[in-house]
Each structure stands twice: as structure tokens, then as C-alpha cells.
Image 1 (cartoon, rainbow, N blue to C red):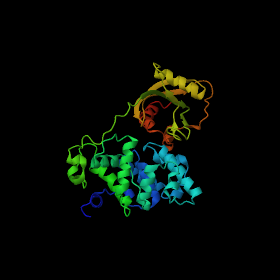
Image 2: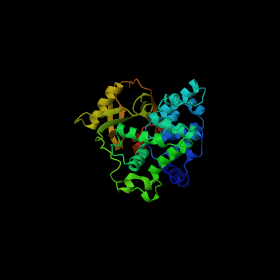
Image 3: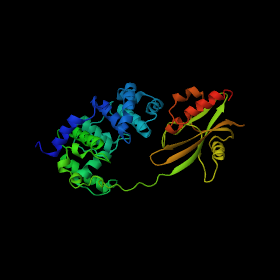
Image 4: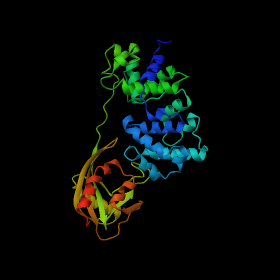
Amino acid sequence: MNGMPVPRLLRWFARCRRELPWRRRHDLYAIWVSEVMLQQTQVETVIPYYRDFLRRYPTLKQLAAAPLQDVLKAWEGLGYYSRARNLWLAARRVRDAFQGRIPRTAEDFRALPGVGEYIAAAVLSIGRGLAVPVIDGNVLRVVCRWQGIEGDVRSTATRKKVLSFLTGIIPENSPGRFNEAMMELGALVCRPRDPCCRSCPLRRDCFAFLRSRTASLPFRSRKRAVPEYRAALAVILRNGRIFIQQRPETGHLGGLWEFPGGKCRPREKPEGAVVRECREELGARVEVLAKLAEVRHAYSHFKVHLHVFICRPGKGRLRTGQSHAWVKAQDLERYPFPGANHKFFPRLHEWLSSHRDA
């Protein structure tokens, strides 16, 4: 048995795993928070957010009782804000429908907001010992190399092959450690480029290593080109205060605060776009005083080139159906904003300090 791949993998994990903060707490809530944060985000980025989040909300009950705006503010900068919103909604659902106890069955747990197959498998295998494999990018890469699976790693068919293989070998007595070991192996050893094959506990059985195929496996089809949009934003000043409005809670960047503006039309100059967008959004004209900044920002499915203008309101009252506020510049930090906005906040404070009469 000692020569079998799975025990070798588990022994490697016991020796080589990283000391990560979520491995020090074994309650289901803490495991759940870590897995939500780790979706599409690197470990090094997650660590400080995880520690701060659990300091603020050490229990599910405290998370469920918190205002959503506070939760989004705690998440600010981590991105993919629907994760925070869904985690908060799920905590409230657990509080109200399950007397504050996280559901024990995979079916009930998967029915919570934001809990898909990956989250359910990770949390319930690590926290409850449910023998369900976890499949993420690291695991797909490890298995495709190990077993010589040639299909497109982005395809459903390849994922099904990987799932079938893992289901057949996951140990009933330690499924959580197995899943963590597979993910850790992909992160530390079986890397996309320059894998450390000589350190791998699976190398003697690995199809790609034995055939020098690690560079060609797994096969990954090209992503479609990501579109880039031009957009214009208005920082509207009145009597030393700045106009901000809140995005709807559903949809992209839901619940965050923003400055009015939007996409530029084809061949439309940003200065014209910001005036048009404000007229359409707020029912009033604005006057452009100065161009503040240009910033570029990338989201998962598109990029944006922002043109930011200092403006003042013209005649007429600004009207918006969204929650809104006039705030002092120093109070902007109290509100959760998208990461793209934070890129020009230093320039905004510089401009305001040199134009104190604005």
C-alpha cells in the first residue's frame, strides 16, 4: 500500500503543505469563507482579506446580522463582489431556514446562494468528510498530466473524465486531505509552466512526466479576445461635496458605489460622452471643469479605459432612481467602490487640495 499513489500524495501533503490561516480553523464557516475567497483569486491576495474578514465576522451569525454595505466594504479590493453578496445572503438563509446551522447535506448546501459544485465539494469534504472530489484549475492540470487526458481542459467532457477518475480514487477516510493535497500539488509542484516534476509524489506514475509531455498537457483552447470599452465618469462637485450613487444590488458590481457616467459611443469624444451620460442618468446638464485622469482596468470578461472628469452641476436638480449621496472627499473611504475607482482617488485628492475653492 505504501507504494500506491494516493498514500504517497497524502504523505507529501503532510510534509510540504503551506501553513495557511484557514488550515488552523476547522469549523465549517471558516472553511466556507476561505473557499469563497479563493475562487478566482490567488492565495497571497486572499490571506490578509481572510484574516480581516474573520476578525470582523468571526461567526456566521455575526455575518448574517451585518449590513450588506459593511460586508462589501470589508471585501473591497478583492473583486468578484457577487461572492461577498452571495455569502451574506447565504448566511442569512442559514440563519432563517436552518436555525443558524450550516446544512449537513450536499443538496441543501448547494441550494444556498453562491454555492455551486466546487464550493460544496470543497467545504463538505474538508469540513464534514464527504467523499466528493474537488475540481479546480490546479486539479484539472494535475489529473490531465498524471493520466494523459488529451481533451480540451475547458470542455465539459474533459471535466467529466477527471471527475470520474477522482471519484474512483478519493479515499473515504480522508477526502478533505486528498482534495487539499491535489490542489496544493497543482499550486506548488505541477505548475502551468516549469513544473517541479522531480519533487512530485506522482511522478513514477505520471503519463506526462514519463513521456516528456508536461509542456503540451493539459491542452487548453484559446480564450476569446476580451473586449475593451471606453467610458467617461463625472466627479460632480457642489459646495465642497461630491455626488455618488449606488449600483443596484443585482448585476455587475452590485451594491457598490460609483460616479455617474457610462460607455462612450463609437467616435464619441469622452468629454461629450460624460455630458450626455449625466443628462441621461440624472436629467440635468453638467459642466466639465477639467480632465482628472485616465485609468485602465480589467474585469473577468472585459477591459475598460476610463476617462474621468471633474464637473459641476448646471441648472436643474439632479434626479436619479438610485440611492445617492453628496459626500466630502475624505468620506469616500467609508463607501465600497469598484477597484477601478480607487486607481484615480489619489489624483482626485491631489486635485481637490490644489483647488480648495471647488
